Amino acid sequence: MDWHRSCIQQAMSPELALTELRGGLVTTLWVAGPLLLVVLVVGVVVGIIQAATQLNEPTIAFVAKAGALTAALFALGSLLLGHLVEFTILLFQRIPHLIG
Image (cartoon, rainbow, N blue to C red; front, side):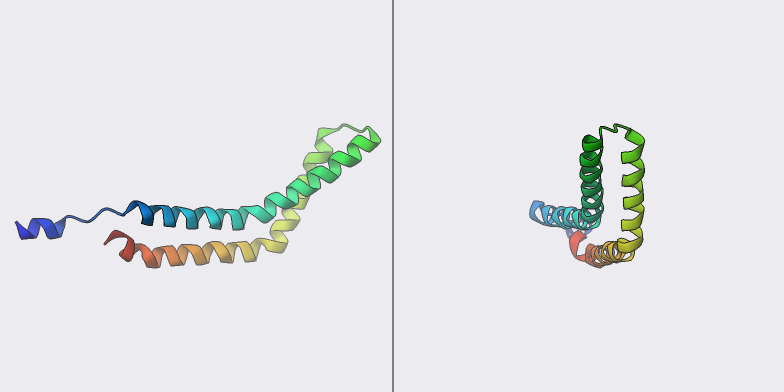
């Protein structure tokens, strides 16, 4: 009967699961936040310019946002990827502690 108890893995506690989920959400915000902020600022600026000039062409806003997102990825891509890789490595290192 003792061998059966040692074969059963203890389930992850809810607190530990929430802690790991929080870490994933924080990492998501760190990676996506700067890019979304750039697109937001460019969208507002282009919207103000279009409203002032009464030039309501949706492709102008799309091209401006796509260009700004591309520039932000070139500027911040290595930093954001480094943060994502660091989180992934730490998560993989914590797996033995998480499951048993």
